[in-house]
Image (tube, rainbow, N blue to C red; front, top):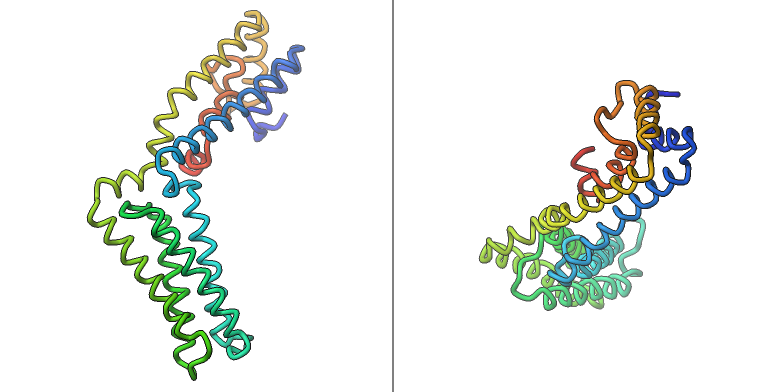
Length: 254
């Protein structure tokens, strides 16, 4: 048995070896589902509290990303690289117009409230993309729609300025939205720990002392240096799912 194997997989095999395959699989699936449900609940609480401004999956983030894509494509089309700007003028006008409208929708939706830094980064990219599109257009003989492209760029730059102004004027709310995910994860931690404790207690209740000792012994023998000393049977599986139960915690520990 390779010592480089996944510890939780090794522990599940230990359950197989003592004739408790179903219990091992149940712990695995129950722990994984609990982790996934915890992350769903955490995101739902963020959406309920911050709405469109939710830093993880608020709809404003998706709209800004779509606007950025439109603005970036518009900038490429009007740059003259591999495309004749005279033939793409209409497409550029449409794309930058869509980007500007989407940006306005977001700005009106968030109102006089700070957005998190990820949204600001998207707005920076949008302002640059629209600004480049307008600069490329204005550097040539004015074409149909040039004024609209320039207007879209103005929206992007104004939106960026507004975001910075609001964040500067409301430092407490700025800090709150920037740390919203970390706070939500921390607030969810006691519930996740309680779930882990329940699954662990249920596991031990279904194993005799002899079976518990055999699982721990097999696990220690197979894992070697990775052995989880002092961790009860099932604890490695449970912890593997419910310690790093969301993508942000996994990145921190990675």
